[in-house]
Image: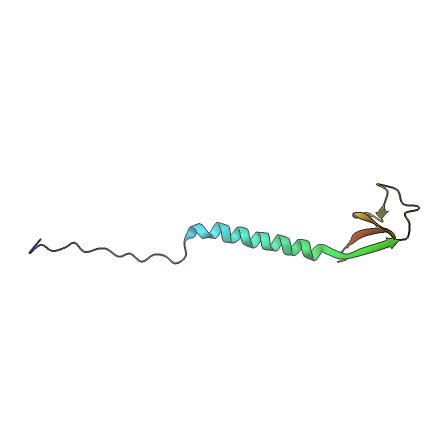
Length: 88
């Protein structure tokens, strides 16, 4: 080893941005846009409370063209929830 020169190591600079990250970043952007568009399309949630369920039938609870959401029965009556579509 005496008198022999050691080989020099080649140092390459690594790219900071790799092309493989384009697809996940685009997918994240599309997902964020879809969630934002969905949340923007929702209208206010309305809760209706009745002292009794007279006049309401199972499967026939519609408000215009929007079905009334899940209902719960409390000790004091029935609670219906619905979400109206956002007007544009």
